[in-house]
Length: 111
Length: 113
Image 1 (tube, each protein chain N blue to C red):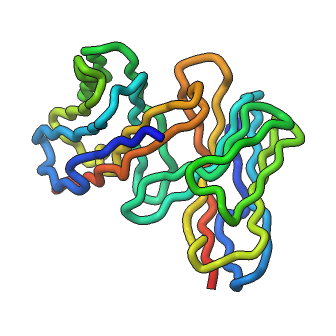
Image 2: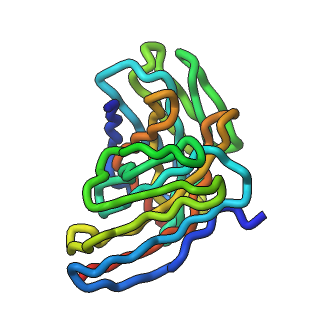
């Protein structure tokens, strides 16, 4: 099945700074989804990207899908303590019935 | 709506015991899935269902059984628990149409001794 790799695996970010997390694949993806999981919580859907070069914004979060549809990024500006958690990318295949997750990027925010 | 509910929240089993993890959703979603989450491994798909009476294997199905007799319920059965099945288990659902957004339950933390 399709696989996605996430880098970095861990990030420590100073409150107020920006950071980016990346999701890469060796094959062309039909879509990419991003989820956030707070410590002790469950994954929560953030967004889905399907078009080449697509860029979507949600307040301080900017999501991009690469032109070749092999990579994606999530950029967060002015980091807040509420941004702490693990960010996962995932791709759906098999008629969108199978969702394959990356291993996640655990983000710690330093006040 | 309660969304996706899972019971129990925590469970400790001995090797060789069997149990069923319950999952229910009240959103009339056709698709339901089970994932396991292990440290540093992300979430891995165990089994999924595209509707009542239809199930299929995911990435890590060995040691687990599922059935889908109703739209609402999707139980996961461990027939003979092993320490390697110690994990956090998440159930998720989504509607057939729409942006593929999966709605996750709160999870069951299982320890097999």
